[in-house]
Image (cartoon, rainbow, N blue to C red; front, top):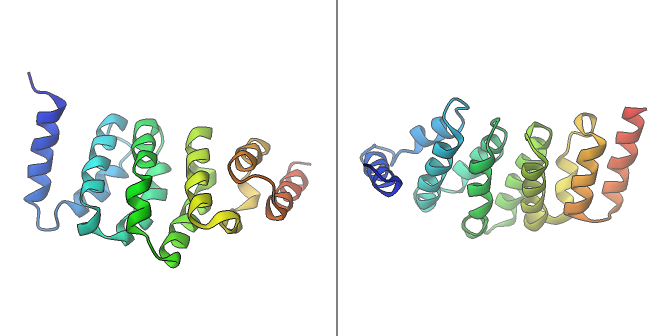
Length: 170
């Protein structure tokens, strides 16, 4: 009987044998909704262990897209658990801002309140309330506003977003 440790070791060996350390395969598979969520979370762990080799651009592009894949509870949990690694990788303000903008621009695509809250929390920790400027207000709902309020707290920008949502709903 094969254990997940054995399977992850075999996956690691296979990815390491690729010319690009598995970068292209991981990018494609992490965004493929036909791959089981548990498998995508295992793939994420492989990607995060290669964070230095893949570089920050890989994660700036991938994280918002991966969180937007339908039925990604395990994968999103693995991504949120890796925030410290992402934080160390993106030490300059422009990179942190790029990731936060990417997260907030895809906010309406996220499947669950948990994923929306986790993405908002990362964006808030990376750049604060300025992340709210990346939201597409037209696609937000009243429940999204509750999530954002819980994540970002009270701010003038959030008041503006709330006003826009209420106008859009009525």
